[in-house]
Structures are given as C-alpha cells and as structure tokens.
Length: 150
Image 1 (tube, rainbow, N blue to C red):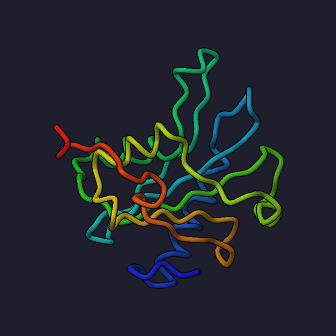
Image 2: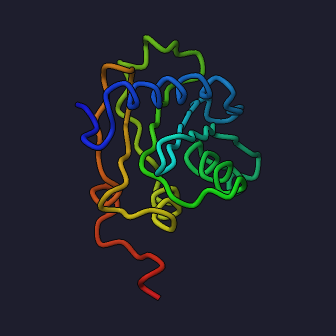
C-alpha cells in the first residue's frame, strides 16, 4: 500500500533508511531490533533512530523516539512521515516479511502526537520496501490528547 502523501520512491527510501539503522539497535534483553526513519515536512531531511535497551527498562528508548530526538536536537519541528521496521536480532531483512507489521508503543504514539498533526502524519509500518501498510497517527491514537488540549 502506497502512502498517498509520499511518492512510492520516497516511501521506499524511508523504509530502506529504517532497515539500515535497525542493525545498530542495542537489544541485549529483548533481542528485538527496531529501526525508524523520520521525514521532515519539507521532505528534504530524514532522521533515523534505533531502539536502545537498558537494564533499567524504563530508561530504554524506542527507535521512533530516537529518530524524533535526533531531528528535534537539530532544530526540526515539522514532520510528515515515519517508517518503522522491526524483527528479531538474528532476523535478516528478507525474513522480516514473516513478522507482524511493527507498530509504535503507546509512549511513542503519545510522544509523536506532541509534534505532528495526527490526522496528516503518516506512519509506515513495513516488513520490506514492497510489503508495508500506512496509517495516520490519528488511526493509531484515536481521540488523542495534545498541546491544544491544554
């Protein structure tokens, strides 16, 4: 399924970036590696992130928040899409198609909500560059609480 607001090539480029960064995940406890590639609203800049686990599980950071933090630390504040890939540590890219589509955890959904329009922000849940589905953040986090709620 193609992201309607992105070209097919840009969608695949994001998925490839997420696949590439996934291998850098630090996952000594879950052995489940996640990669994410965040696209700025300008569609010119992409920031990547991977999950980094910690023995104090609350200190673990997910790939999605890692990508957002990279972009935010560079002064970026407007985003249009994020691609997410995930699978077991020893799982090759071609074997990801056997896994479920990776979805962001609740904390990541709420974190993303702080910085995007949930009705427009596209979340690309990918197993490969040809096997993915696209949802809006609003679909993943209905009736959300955001900055305008305060």
